[in-house]
Image (tube, rainbow, N blue to C red; front, side):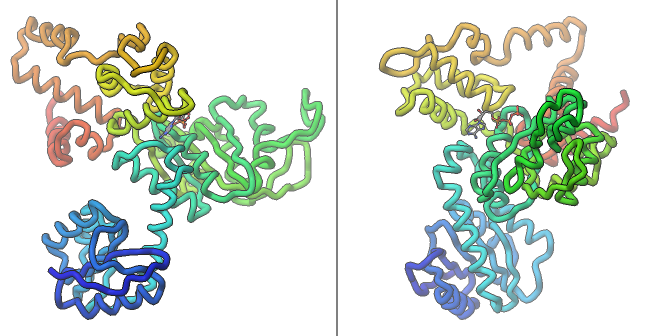
Length: 456
Ligand SMILES: Nc1ncnc2c1ncn2[C@@H]1O[C@H](COP(=O)(O)OP(=O)(O)OP(=O)(O)O)[C@@H](O)[C@H]1O
């Protein structure tokens, strides 16, 4: 395998160019010249945050090479084999970490395709490294970085509606705020919580009303459609929207105009729609509880902030962030016991739960020096790290033993219970459930199939 050196200008994007096969040297040199002419500083080899790899065949060594290079950079894979990659091999390249794959038979292709991608990826990387993004969506775990990347891309480079799904406290509103900040809207972000709308007043909340439109309408008032004009309408808990409002919302989105309650005049409005829910909206569409046509309108782009238990590596960074906010400056250190407590405690309310836990600890903390275990409030200690298996587990197993249940049956039942629980928590997603259970996708699929075949 060979590397090649081309022009190193100092303009705009910088990217390394790696030629994985000597037969492609000429193609690599041509691409290097064209990129340089387009203002890309072409570096001879990694490191560097952006890279391009030219390779001659889709095979296992190529996949291994892509995995190695993509671990430290955003990589564009260009396959120069005569025939196009099979669907499987293109996905394999993405699985290996490549950001995109192009097919240039014999190394011939349009350098503008490469430049456009490098510029976009560099802009996304810069935004991701900015204080605006890092202070809003704190975390560096791979799962969280992937989420932030997709949010930044859709917010800054499109006007697409966005549907954010995820558990309570995972940062859905925080994401909506960031979309507003990055989207360049001249208008405001208007939040409506669909779970708290009263059926009688929801029309007025959305459309506004004229004076005297109904009993109690003492003065004319703007609704969310007027207030969000030029900005973002953020519908929290959108899955709770009553069916009649779903139909009316769909009409306004399609026609971009509305009438105030009690008025006959159409008012124009243009807003970007961002919706959030912790319900399984696709299941609601399947059951008829949520309109399919509205769903496809609001779900132009979907993202799902992971639960905190799926990114435990971010806990200490979040703790530091919240302590910094509370201290109004450099946060105090944490004693190892406090750190361990925070890392092992469960957070059913996700980041909100963690923030409140940190605040409670902070309120008890005093004086200089580190946060110590005595700062953890007494009621919090109930959540403290417990050894496992604990007494409750031993009692359940003891009961099974008393009933004469065999060891293999006890093990099987415990494993089945864990699988059912995790699958329910992950809404049936096999891949996520397998990752949490520490087994392969395939192993989980086989266990599910076997369980489905078993008689009751
Ligand atoms: N990644 C994050 N970085 C910093 N703060 C965060 C992050 N995620 C969430 N928070 C904080 O956690 C709290 C809850 O976040 P948010 O309100 O966005 O969650 P949510 O998913 O909208 O919750 P709900 O579904 O209950 O409305 C907020 O105080 C928010 O500032």
